[in-house]
Length: 340
Image (cartoon, rainbow, N blue to C red; front, side, top):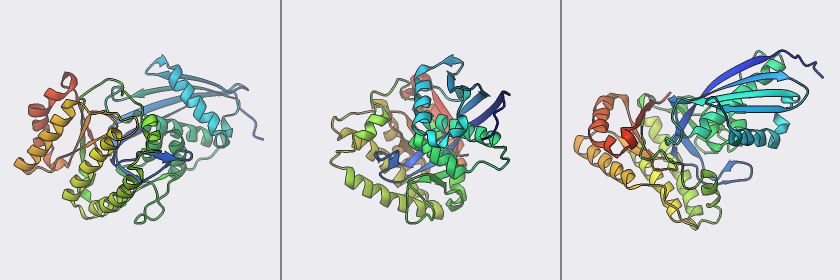
């Protein structure tokens, strides 16, 4: 057994959020997906986490979110560490003081669990390396595996550009246990993509994603949805390889609308869209047709709209957002991010 040091050390990691194009909705076992998902990794929307770590002979955890103690997040992290203690033996007897902050506002339609939990895991793996005097780089498959146990979408946030989570015939090494990078399979045009997030509502969702996933267990459309998602994954991968923007747009928008249709037809049914969401969607479709601009939308599990487009049309799209779309946003609020 290695002798413990009482020295205090600090690790800091930053991890981005991501936006899924193929949607993950429904799971089984221990955070395993019922269908593959594929996402863009973002750049400007990230969580930065710092852990001050000291051996004190007991397991102690303090958690601060944006400078304030947060018992809800603290309890969630404690549960994650306890439930998966077989992977975190190196933390025995440690006092962890965790401080976390986001570069984006809370409830802004960006998956904070993806960025926060992947940042946490990256910090923990850095601590493991320090404790074990290991100077090798962090194993991203391991980071993705552990991030998935904390939050499914977090498994994809450890990789740049685009990531796939879920076993898929056309991607060797793909797995339900962890995500894999598909950066090398993506045509250059998609590596220039922007994600502009239009903040239709900054309120908390009326139903959590966790509960939404559970409602898929007895959903009448579950089997057909999972089959469709697997088919869409294969089609999208081919489109990404070929630089086929038209097919990308078709898949991205149909996946977004299918996700919300699953919510409408669950038991009990629920609706996370707002009238402004539909007005933005209608405006985007009209603008794409009349101006021949390759702009499309996607939605997460909420009312806010993500606009996806290549850098070559960024100036046109930003003008369109400012002229025609910000009126549907809370306090004219929107976030401009890029694939990274």
